[in-house]
Length: 66
Image (tube, helix red, strand yellow):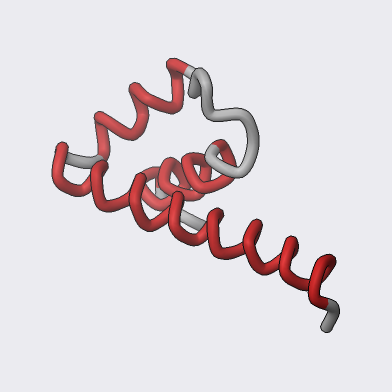
């Protein structure tokens, strides 16, 4: 359904939802193949911000209620 470039970005988004101490080397290689340095920086920031928003939203719902 997705091309290899998009698939790599989606895998990054998924990887950033878990433990990010060490990303899989294969993923890093794939990302570097498909994206330049500026694009990678933007992907990291967008994926990280979306993840932060989701986590903060989940915590707010639990603490503050619906």
